[in-house]
Length: 211
Image (cartoon, rainbow, N blue to C red):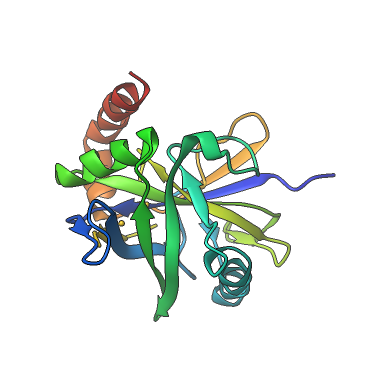
């Protein structure tokens, strides 16, 4: 039986920086994901599990130059190039925070992300992968060692706590159709959720992106 899709979202915000060596190319850097922190769906990625998959991802995708990601989360473990918005250029650890540098592509999806960030708005960076979870006695869902990272996507609904990207160039989502979606909400998302504004903001952004 195939493992379900696991998605973990992190709020992503910052100022875009144009490449000094490649005019017209924009990049952003910031927190991609956080190890050991419970996200909104009660799911935790242990540092050693996430670290191993990140190492594999760097060797097999980042260094090869094809660490593509999409705009919005498809419920698939395959990255669709027709919807590609960015490519991950570098990943490194700062404590339990997984940092990354992401280059925005000059594609329709990439330009949407660029304009959102240029406007100073928040967008989410979301890891997409497959794997299983195990529930503790306290109800926490622990991601298991069979986790396999697929990519990071840009999404409208933020999910890793306190993770904001700062431009130089960001999933577990709602459960549905066999997908498990984990969210790690940042301070911005938590504040919006307290008075119900987050759901309305999420709906507005989704409508803009799909227009």
